[in-house]
Amino acid sequence: MAASKVNTSPYVIEIKDLEKEFSDTGTKTLSGIHLRLNPGEFVFLTGASGSGKTTLLKMIMGLSRPSRGEIFVMGQPVHKMGDSSRRTLRRDIGIILQDHRLLNSLNVSENIALTLTWTSLSSEAKRKRVAEMLQIMDLTHIAFSRVASLSGGEKQRVAIARALIRAPQLILADEPTGNLDPPTSRQLVRMLRDLRARGSTVLFATHDMTLVRDFGGRVLELVSGKLPADSHPASDQRFKTPNFWGNA
Image (cartoon, rainbow, N blue to C red; front, side):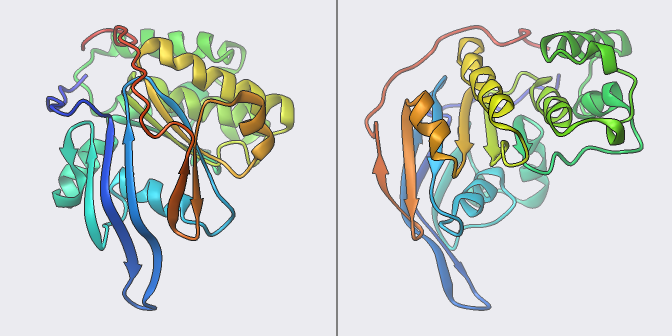
């Protein structure tokens, strides 16, 4: 696995006075956002449709630039980085989206292995990691199936396996349960919460308040582009555990 830059910040995500205004319309989507996420936290990001959840996640991913403010992800100043550096950073983030973004031309194993393309792992090491993720996500029996033939829940598990195979320090999930039935949605949340034991920080955007009520924990609420509600704003809970597979 390619070496990442050293994280000199105690926070996995640190956002200061963030603002996003679209120049073509003058619409201000986010304003005055301050946020800190500690290592090993699982955090729900809630808010009505149009409240700015996806816009915030895109800026954390480096897919959109803020109009004002600072964003530090794993110690790196995303707001100052060029496009190439942002792309490199995204390779170290586990990103789970509602629409999966799987390649129908590839089978399950090949889709999971995609994010290992940029690593220095040997072919054998890559095969081993794919096999481990197939087992963890209960996908071994469909390892060579084309993703076009899978159910929505199976596709989501493939997308999760692909996002987690590099043992990311940060996982960003944008409405990942939107196409899932309630039992599968709950299974997904439990799985992501369990990743705290492997040292991952998870920011889970959802409008499904049933999930939020049932699982609890730290909850951020966006309201009209502002972040007035944080159930644990001074949270200092940290999980000091080894990397999923160690260094590579």
